[in-house]
Image: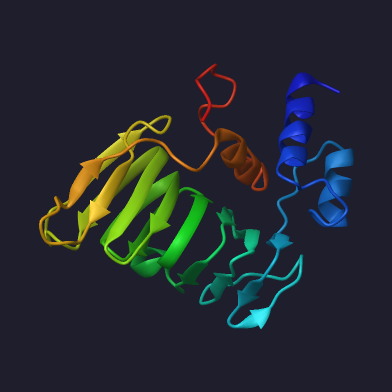
Length: 222
């Protein structure tokens, strides 16, 4: 077993994806064979997870137009096309039907995402964000959103300043921001990297037969 595969197995184990109630047997079999899975739908369901208000199960598809909701004890890992997501507890994410018009809307909560190449439009309570084949972490509250562009390119238009667009390019969590929509607060301020890790990004990219651009380059991990 080579070093990169040992590291991957360790990362998946730490994330609880190799336990009996972790990823489905199809993915475990792919790991045993040394293959990348590329399997659609829910890869992990922990606690209360609902799609369109109904209880879910591992292996269930997640489709454009679906609403994914997690409860106080909920967490979900899922794949849509060649995009992968880690949705944390107390989160509501509504997926659109056309990526360039509205790929998803984070109503509330926290989600880590990796995306296939191509333009997509993300909507959060305080901004509209255009991305191109990248990865990001979002924590959304009604008047404040934390946004970390983990790598890639994004254009952020704060709702507090319609018409203002700030372009961000990062290689490794270089420019996280808070985006406010609150009187007396600047629309955008710099932030620190928080509440997401490189191991999680590696895992999500692996689900789509990819590696993040920082992988193997000796960069400091978060």
